[in-house]
Every structure is written in C-alpha cells, then in structure tokens.
Amino acid sequence: MQTVAVFNPQSGVGKTTLCANLGHALALAGHPLTLVDFDPAGDLSASLGLFRAPTQGIDQVLLEQATLEAVSISTRDEVHLIPAGSRLSEWASGSISDMEKGKLLGRLLSAESSETDLLLFDCPSNADLLIANILLAVDWLLIPLPGDDAGAESLPHLLQTIETFSRARGRPLNYLFVMNRIPVRRRLTGVAASKFSALAPGHFCKSVICQSDQLEQARQIGRTIFESRSGSRPASDFSQLASELVRRSLSLE
Ligand SMILES: Nc1ncnc2c1ncn2[C@@H]1O[C@H](COP(=O)(O)OP(=O)(O)OP(=O)(O)O)[C@@H](O)[C@H]1O
Ligand SMILES: [Mg+2]
Picture 1 (cartoon, helix red, strand yellow):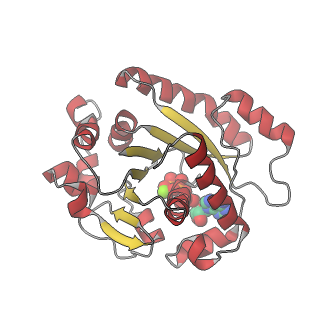
Picture 2 (picture 1 turned 30 degrees about the vertical axis):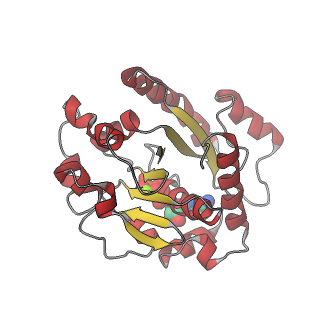
C-alpha cells in the first residue's frame, strides 16, 4: 500500500480540489484508490457529492481502531472514500506534544492492508496534530503551490518543514510540488517555470493545473471535473498529472 498526502499548511491553495480530481483521474486511468478526508471540515466528501457528511470515517480508525475497510465507502469508478467522521475534530484537539498520538496514524497504517493500493489523504490547513500524523506516516507529499510570488515565498518554509519531519521519521519524506491556478492564456512561461524548479530541483511536476472556474462549478455540485466537463482544459490537466505521477515516481501498479 502506498500512502500520499495532498499537503500545504496554507489555506485555499487547492488541496481538496487536487485530491478529488487527481483521485478520479488516477481511477479512470486504471488505478483504483481510496481518498481519505483528513480534514474535519469534510470538504473532500462534499466535493464528491456527500453534502451531508457521513458520521463515521477515519475518526473511527483513530479512536476505535476500526479497519480502513470498515469505514470505506464506494463513490464512483473505483474511487473509494474514507470520510472524516464527526469525531475527527475532537480527536485532533489533543496536544501536539503527545508523541504517541502524533505517531498513531503511522502505526495503524503499517498494520493495515487496504483493499486498494493507494491511499490519498486530503490534509487540513490548521490542525497541528493531524498534520504531524500525516507527516510522520505517509510515503509521499503532493504539494499544490500557487504559481505566483506568494507561492515562491512559501517554499523555504515548506522545505524546512519537510526536512524537520524527515529527521523525526528517520527516513526521508518524498515530495513533489504541483503548480496550481496557472492562467490558461499565460500558462507557465519557461523563465517562471525554471525560477520555481531551481528552488527545489527535481521536485516539481511538469504538469500544471490551470486556473478554471469550471473546477469551482464542478465542486459546488459535488462532481469531479470528469463528470461535469470531461473534455475541458482542467480535465486534461488532471489526466496529464495522473499519467506523470504514475510514470515518474509513485510506481502505482
Ligand atoms: N485551479 C483552480 N482554478 C480555479 N479555482 C480553483 C483552482 N484550484 C482551487 N480552486 C478554488 O479555490 C478554492 C480553494 O480550493 P481548495 O478548497 O481546494 O483549497 P484547500 O487548500 O483545500 O483549502 P483549505 O485549506 O481550506 O482546505 C476553492 O473555491 C476551489 O474551487
Ligand atoms: Mg481543503
């Protein structure tokens, strides 16, 4: 089982959008997977059409040691979902200095054999204990990054966080950045792209996600871009990103 988290502690950078649409793209390309809504807000579940958040999910895994399979539901085209559950925020209110609690997700995952090969987590922005659990547990981080000055400025802090947690784990935390919200007409010019990739060489996906209101429209009706606008530019961006990830690093079977 491979574990990947869509992570960026900054709010509103596109984590949930990336998780839902990349997840569906991977499934459509023949890679069944389980998405995990690791944000008590439940935005991922709503993005997939579950507007009344299911009461049980990953909270039951953390609190009651339920198996992943017991709380996983099937959504569409081999996309399974583990919702956040109504008690995730209660669990996440624990102290960050509680090291055992910080490592719980990692311990539970290492004892699991999920029904799918890939678990893709949607991370919250402000929940230290949940974020620490993710950074100590997963194999890979996928980090959506705005392709503007704010994105470039946030990079050193992100790299520092990754290094700190790599040391704490005793094994490196793999990571890839995905540029998001790139204006369609400009795309990312060669100069801008090389400026970004020079900041973390080898850690930028070639595929980028365009700025598109179609993504917001799809999300509002609880659909992925493949269900609402299958031939669109953002749908093609997510398909390309899925192929790149399969090809370059995530070695999905
Ligand atoms: N490429 C894009 N084009 C247009 N809108 C986008 C794009 N990516 C994300 N958005 C919009 O930006 C907003 C924030 O996106 P999203 O909720 O995915 O971010 P997030 O990082 O998960 O936020 P949070 O930190 O609150 O969980 C949403 O309204 C979403 O529809
Ligand atoms: Mg989100």
